[in-house]
Amino acid sequence: MPGTARRRSSGGGRAAAAAAAFALFFATGAFAEDATVTIDNFTFSPPVLTIKPGSKVTFINHDDIPHSIVDASGKFKSKVLDTDESFSMTFATVGDVSYFCGLHPHMKGSIVVTP
Amino acid sequence: MTSKKQGDDSTLNVDRRGALECMLWAGTGVLWTVSGGVPASTLLGTAQAAETGLTFLQISDSHIGFDKPANPNALATLEEAVGKVTALPTKPAFLIHTGDITHLSKPKEFDDAAQALGKLKLDGHYVPGEHDVIDEGTGKAYMERYGKTARGAGWYSFDQNGVHFIGLVNVVNLKAGGMGNLGADQLAWLADDLKGKSASAPIVVFAHIPLWTVAADWGWGTDDSAQALALLARFGSVTVLNGHIHQIMQKVEGNVTFHTARSTAFPQPAPGTAPSPGPKVVPAGELRGVLGITNVTYRQGSKPLAITDSTLAS
Image (cartoon, rainbow over all chains, first blue to last red; front, side, top):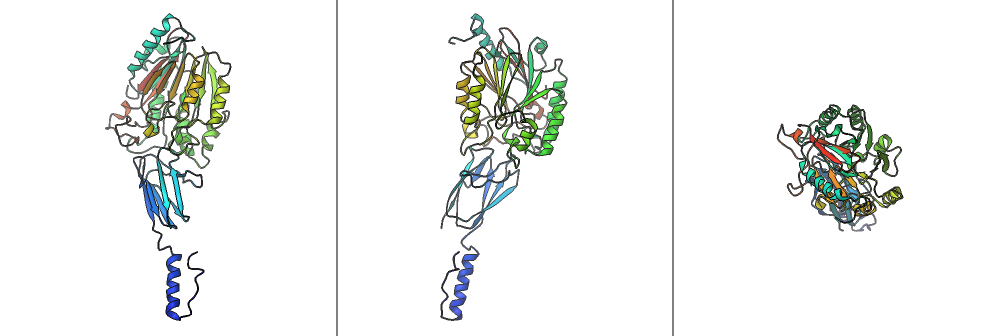
């Protein structure tokens, strides 16, 4: 975890406060920003979403037909999302995640998690 | 037209007539008549069903549970379809349902569908659509109800009146970027199932997603269907019945006739006419003109199978 192994400065209260703020900054994932992938007309949008580690991504289905989110490498899959239903997932690890719709596999998208 | 196993002088003409009859689609149901091992179609409600032969019913894409603007009550339109069939002068021999019985694989949806279809008082032969295998158990609910005697994910075959019927499943283990999928296990079973069958035996194959590519960018096809069709190539008469695309499409290729049925729930757009294959909303009063059923009749002799689509409005 960032911040947990940080050496405490001996310089007094100000440095300690800065270190604490720094730790808090990482612990709360200030770089991570929640993002949304929408499904309209059998299309994931954006098709490629770039996020920081720890970001929560919410997939929401706006179609009148159910869809689902299935990791192409088999690590996760969502429940089936009927109209206006959503599924959220936090991506902690740096890397590319390719996914597709379990009902309509020609629908594809990817999440790029960058440091 | 090269050598056909059953070939005689009339075969060519029969096939041509069969092709012409294919242009007569109208309405919501297809009545299938298998005659002399070759499929042909006739309009539901015409008298041919009373002739000697095997007539069976195809219903597809009931989507019980669907309640969106394209059809707020999919159960009611299925019940109307059932009512049309029970009013036929000749009772079909059995029902084939080509999948998407339910919309979300929920127990109540399966129950409602079974209750409505039960009024047909017909033996039913089912294959799942992708909407029937989206429960937590990935098809457990479907298999408990319809797949107890089937192989794998629900495939099987049976014989009736000299016609060999094969129900295939192409809606499970779908691959990213792909379309429908049969898989190696099912193809191996199919090869074994067909082993030793006479090439003159009429074959009817039914599956949910079309076994030929209707629209690749909409996923309307089956990735490994060519392997299944290769196994069927030696047979003189093969009829392939599908659903999934909620509209009638027909293609004749060599000895194989492909046909997709209408839905009883909602129409979908023709490929290339809309940004996506989502439900097509039609003006009030026109819905029943785009929903339907299919009847198929097989007659011994030298005539083709007769396929009759009829709408709920007709």
